[in-house]
Length: 414
Image 1: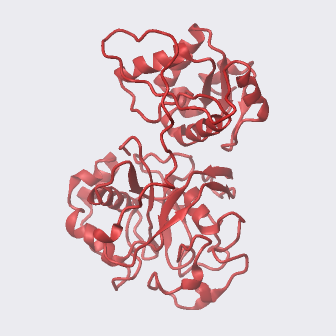
Image 2: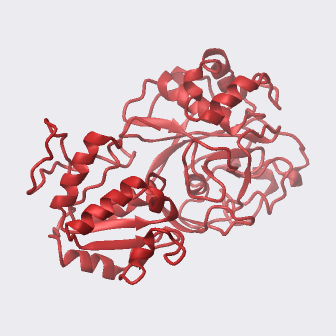
Image 3: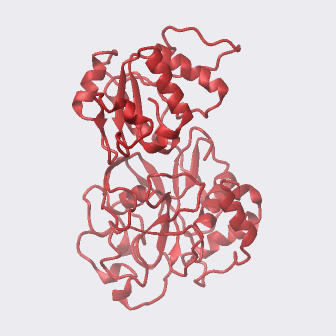
């Protein structure tokens, strides 16, 4: 499977679907690009029976994807283009496939059944789940020989079985993990050009039961905030750290209150610091995407609020309750979602990882980021599970906080 880094989440979902249908799959999401890895990629393309390429504006600009497609064409490999984003006519690169039999998967849909049937005409398919092909690095500067690829058993990919880290060894209470099983979620079309709506398949993950509190964030301020290491994920993050002197301000008072006046840049640095403080291997702490956030809030039945379809002002802190300011994260046990996640609507908006207006979860850049959940100043319409909004990553508001998730991280890199 050939794809750009921006489209890696979809590429992994596609790989999982192919594996489940009995195909052996090679995908490079376990490795980082580099000249040594290019030799491994060459070997994979030379040995494959079918070459799948994800077409998007981003992959059309990727020199790696262009090299892979060119090599596959030179080797006359059967190619299966999937249109993930954009269109072919206006593309400077993907117009080469305008007369090809490509599958339209825009909206992050899985390909139609005909796609899998066509692939099965060219490559063996097992009655049991397929295997994920693993390529070792070549020992010399020579290209590896062609021929059958060695295979290994597939690495466990979803975080349903790993041991969740003991966050209370680093942060004070209240804290708990809530495990969210794999499933689907449907995002509404967002006003103002937000990340595309539609149905998304979400691998399993774990999410914090409550938003991050003042006492928990204070630990980061004391032990990690001033360290440039946690901000080197982007030039914008490092610039933010150097230019901001208000790091100890919060819009709330009290250890169990949600931490507010925290920018997206701050929240990302907190996650990076906590991942190392917990000495994590193979997993990491990060912000949820809005798809993950919504999955944790509504479960499988697309409900309007974490507790059900009918609004109840006694279960959350919105303007209908008349409180008018944030409240402790443990105040509303009736707010629990199907997975026992509390305080997901009302009280404070929560930062999400993804950019607004794209599907990207890259940490670099200054584009607006998604926020979810509404606040104490939101009405019941705004505080729905499906309501989508955004703010710029340097925004600090007295009604804007965050919570964290734990996911598998086989690369060990952001």
